[in-house]
Image (cartoon, rainbow, N blue to C red; front, side, top):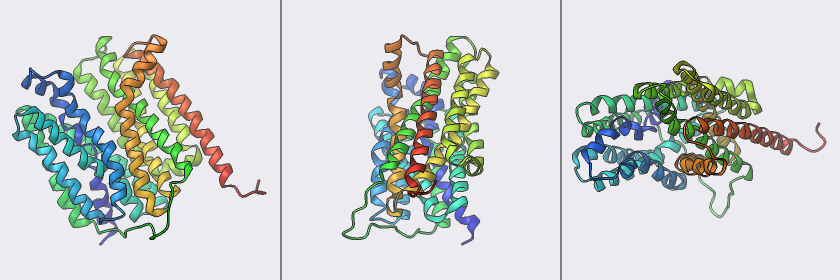
Length: 387
């Protein structure tokens, strides 16, 4: 098998990672189709898959010790396809939510699997580059699924779910191009613990997702509330964030090699600068620059953490470490509204523009946190007596 074919198979898995976004363009139409159901409940169509990712990503990490990864990919793809497509044929809202839960099970396996497979097949600079490409292909998948959902949804909200047929196509493409990696198991009778230094990475991923969701949850409130833009403008602003992530992912490997131990702190500073521009913006152009900068930081920071986790733990624990990282991110996204609600109540802040100020402070705090953590790790790894 050629190296190019192997790379295609690994990256194709990444393209399925943002499949939950198919329904974003048609949520308003689903609300109209189910007028007797509370809109907050209907929003679970978008939120439930993330909750199930939190639960099932660590389960994937554990199952890699017992099952071949191609088998796990087949299970994940089946959950993804059935949970994704079946709502097109259902009129019972409870069953639709059940299918979204099944989709979340599939995503819980697929999201950590994408980075885990890269750690199986690639090392060194090639691993860094591929982790960046993995982030880029995840962004491409997000754009692809949203466009497909929007286009098909124009014929009816239920048609949007046919976009998950893309996942069936990807399954066959990956199944035919991807070899089974060598299983890295914990030797019988031996106990391996997760190194304590990786827990700061889990916390950082959790915190970054909270910061990122401040933008995603407040962009519409700010632009619409201040009459800066309409629904199309809001959609473009969030798309530019995804495009920024796409660009950042393609250059992530080079950025990691140049910035080295300062990668994370500088990326958080870039994120703070993006939110700073957003906070002071009074034109759409300024806001578009802000979302693109935030997306750029996302596109490099997340794959940088996958690289860090893959080299910081024993090989048999890589899948579990990445899975916990994925769960930490999804927990951060899920609790963000509650965290901000507590902060806003404490300081008398409003949703919208004020939330960007909170994101600036949080990003600067995280920049300092990861800088101190990098220096502490560097000091711990330096042999005594070496300056």
